[in-house]
Amino acid sequence: MNIRKAVIPVAGKGTRFLPATKQTPKEMLPIINIPMVHYSVMEAVESGIEQLIFVTSSGKGSIENYFDRNLELENFLEQNGKIKELELIQNVSSMIEIITVRQKEQLGLGHAINCASPIIGNETFSVILGDDIVRGERPATKQLIEVSKKNNGKSVIGVMEVPNAETYRYGIVDGEFIDDKRLTLLMKAMIEKPKPSEAPTNLATPGRYILSGNIFECLNEIPRGVGGEYQLTDAINMLASRDEVYAHKFDGDRFDTGNIEGFLNATVEFALRDESTKELMLNIIREKIKTYGIKR
Image (cartoon, rainbow, N blue to C red; front, side, top):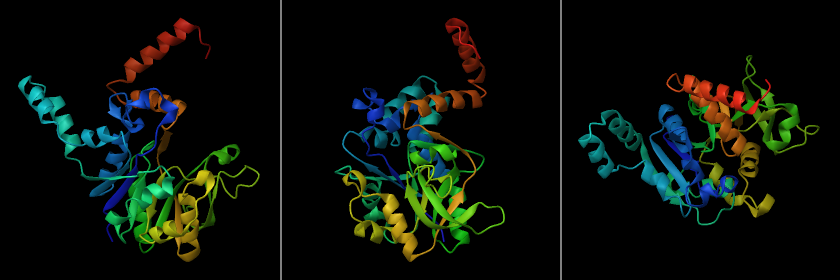
């Protein structure tokens, strides 16, 4: 069983980044010189995904344009001898086959994923949230695909451990471990943002899923939930009541770039991890500490 398709929902308004996102999609905001959505697409490519479905809304055309060819820019770079830059943008445009579908109303993550159902059909597929970046030796999506293959193509929810006091910020998974390393669980339920005193575990869902095509039947049956939206959590719980759904603790560092704090953290961290920018970032930090008298 090969998982060939991935869905990346990018229809949100990005209100936390206004006024920048008045005209620029949040997903196109750069972390140094790479738009955040680029990292999600790279994860899909490195996980063996062949076809990517962006679920978009009005004003998101620049995302599709970014992954398309720009012949005028290519010609300019070639004529001016900027071969390295030329190769960079050509690599972006040739990474993967991309299809876009329009979510005409923002009615929740479940609704966004359901918009891709005509393209997905009955296939098992991946979902990658564009403002959750995971960096590690192996792509998080690839790790989940491997767990799905080991378990007859069943759905797998990516999870990570969070401090017990922060369970109210996430969907939390309840289940029983099925392996000695305590990495994979057979899921009982997912609870949306439980209080720490009510959370069954500290295993949170940061936006990585492998879902069987049966999820669409559930998405079509669930009622609107919180905020009048169709919640993916509700559909996954319905699926878990009918079929085996697993959760897996993936290996990698997660960056929540959907808010200002996480975006800044990712920018600094990525600069420090890259040898070409590490010293520059360290020097900037040292100078700012000196200028503002910040005590360590």
